[in-house]
Length: 275
Image 1 (cartoon, rainbow, N blue to C red):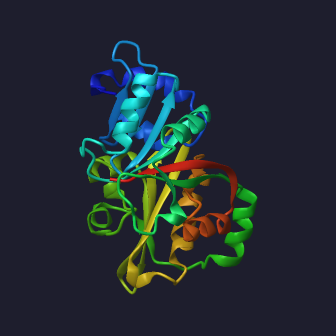
Image 2: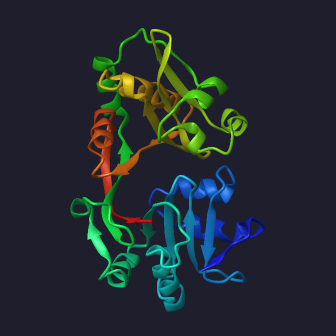
C-alpha cells in the first residue's frame, strides 16, 4: 500500500468512474473537496485503490488479486502497526472483493451484533443500504406530512460554525467558504434556536447526497423529515438526484429514508475497521 500524492489523484478518476455503487464520498476526496487519503498498489500504473474520506468512510476497489497489497491491507485493517487512530467504514467494489476479504479476515471478523464490547483489532461486519429516490412516493408523503409554515433558512456560515453533532457540514467540507461556494444546506429554527440542518454531504453535477443532524434537545419532534424535505425540494427544483445511504443497523436513518420516498436498492457488506 503506497500513499498517493495529491498531484497523482488524476490516475484514480477513470477507475473510480467505473464503480457503480454509491461513491460520492470517494469522489469528494479525488476532486479535493475533502482532504482524505488514497492508497494504491503502485504509483506508475495503479490497479488497486483504497480511498479514505476524513469522516471515516472508505472504498476499496480495483483488481483484487494482488497478494502483496492484500496482505498489507490486512495488516492496515487490523491496525497491526498501531498507526490508525480511528475507525474506518469500508465498502468494496466489485463484489469479488467480498469473498477475498472474508477469507483474508476469517479469524478476525466479528458480526456487529456480537461486538457489544467494541473489540479492537477486529473487523466488524455490518451491512450498508443504498437507496433509490422515488419522487412520486415523496410527493405523497410531503402532501400529508410537511407543514406549510416552518422557520427554515439557507445554511450560512453561522449554522456551519454552530451546528454540533456527528453528521454536520464542517465534518464533510474543508471549510465554510468551500461549502457556501459549492454546497447547499437548510437549517430549521425552533423558537429562534437552531434545531436541525440538512446539507449536501457530497455533490456532483447531477447527484446530491444528504447529510442531516438534529441537536439532542430537538429530537423526537419530526424536525428531521421537515428539513430533509426542504433539501429534497431543492434537488427536484435543480435537477439533482437525491442520494441516501446508511447502515442497515441505523434504524432511525433507515426509517426516515423510507418515509421520505427512498426505496431500498442494494444491501452491501460494510466492514468497520476497528482502531
